[in-house]
Each structure stands twice: as structure tokens, then as C-alpha cells.
Length: 189
Image (tube, rainbow, N blue to C red; front, side, top):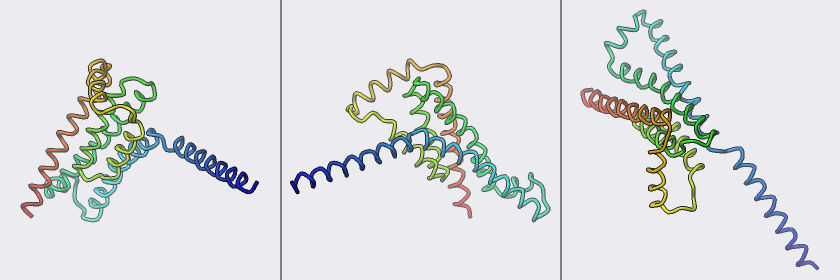
């Protein structure tokens, strides 16, 4: 009798734990992480523009002078403004994923955006994107099957998804260039 009550209590506890886990899975979907990263992509340019505006007011100089005299601020300005395009790619990708279309092309563009954010130092946004991708990955397939399916699905993707993918590649290339500029600027300091 006592053993039955103990087992019943364990089963109830395990049921509560699994229900809490299911609720957490519903709350923290991949879309949640992508939306938080998109919000960060919108905030960074605004914060940087506020910073530049404060510099202009305090030093009584123009925007052109700030950009010409400090190459670090010029490269950072380009990176901050590119975050708006990263947010656009994320927004389009989230809509594609919600519609159930072009999952693999969208995930590829998300990976490229996350890598570009690592290059410019936005570790939080790249972590959120990778976390969202992790939540949306199929877990029962082998890597070889996933890669074959991935390439086949990218070939079948719509024009909008392919444009997002090409845009992500261009953004990554620009962030690689700006990363090289950062290295060059810091090596001369």
C-alpha cells in the first residue's frame, strides 16, 4: 500500500515535470529567439545613431567630420546600419518558416547572418539565432541525410528565399570586409 502511494507520487511528479517542460517548449519556440534577435537588430542602429548624435552635440561638429576623422566609427556605422538588413532577412525568414516554405534556404540565410554577427561582435544576436536554429532542427536524421535533403530543398526554393540567401551572403561578405578593416585599424593604433 505504501509502495503504491510512493509510485503514484513519482508518476504525478514526472507528469508535472513533463507538463512544465511542454509549456517551456511552447513558450521558447524558435520564433521567439528569432524575434528577440530581430529586436536587437533594430535597437543597435538606433542606439548607435543616438551615440553619434550625442557626440555631435557635445563636440559641436558635423556628422561628416566624425566619419572622416575616426575610421573606427565609420566602420561601426556601416555595421550598425547593416543590422537593419539583417532584421529584414530575419523577418522574411520567419514569415517563410511560419508558412512552412523553404525551410532549408531560410535556415542557411540565418546561419550566414549569425556568422556575420559573430564577426562584428554581436554575440548575443548570433547566439539567439543559433538557439532558434537548434530548436527547429530535425533531431532523428543522420547528418548525411540532412545535408542531402538540405541541398535538394535549396534547389527547389522560391525566388524570395533565394534572394534572402543571396542577401545574407552579401551581408556576410561586407561583415568580413569590415572585420578586416577593424583588424587593420587596430593594428595601426
